[in-house]
Length: 441
Image 1 (cartoon, one colour):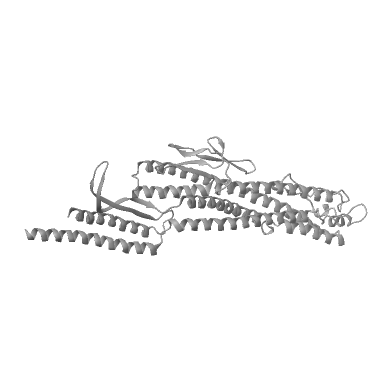
Image 2 (tube, rainbow, N blue to C red):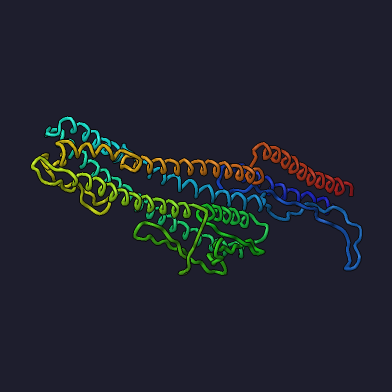
């Protein structure tokens, strides 16, 4: 009779807990980072046993062994790796799109202004004394200089933006490191197989997901599930043994980024922070290239103009001043100072301007630069699409194991409700049997 009551009591306790677990799964079906849980149950043996002898054993009820999370570590690790690659590609693409916008003719008008210089020079060959055309020529020169300054300002702003975003990303990364160590403390104190331990493990995995999407990290676990986190490349300790080592970011004069941990370089080839570093390198290269083209164009156009003679019969003066794209400025010339003539004719220098529209001319060089930028952006876009597809597939494989399936939970709910009713019926039968025995005395 006592066995019957024990079976019923333990059944009620176990299946009540199981129903609560199903309810938690249903309630958290859309909660990010939540891994499906199930209650591991076992038989409670009953019977007379000795140290070296096991007697006959009869069922004695249901034993709750603990809470088990539905996870597959290999799939989790694969999802984290692919997520880091996807975040790096997406971050890099975002800033490269902005670079393309900063260099576009709609933003700076460099291409249009260069074309206008040569178009006006062609018109001046037919009417070299026309002051309106001379004014238009000088305005086109000013537009080119203004376009370079605009592009330089845009790229400088992008460099500052990347640096600020990287600093914010580092702050978030360090905050996650601190939170992860707090989870480690909780895991070492949690009772194995408890709901509290499962919740802590969910939060641990969520933090590791975020950290992996930010930078390359490598995690190992102790028997409590507490994590030791290291930099994937150098192996420097980030979290472990009660120690948290934050990382830092430094921006160079040209905007290039470098990360460090504990004073040592922290090189990461994956994650959002790697994307910021790659984007910063690209912007720095574009700024250097823009300065080179600005000085090259100024030198070419200055030399061509100085080779001519203006309306006053004096030699042509430089059209531009400045040593970089940010400082390029049109010289303050009057229409009469436009050097349209040369030693042989009144329009000879403007005719010479037309010969600059070749393979090495400013227009062709600028168009080639823009084509290179477009190709780099298209390549980054293709890499982002591939990385995103890979990350989605890895996340789907992980979710197939860890995600809550409401249909499955519904069937589990019915199963445990029936088991609970059966356990309650067992206690009722035991009570009725006992009452019958007492009545027969």
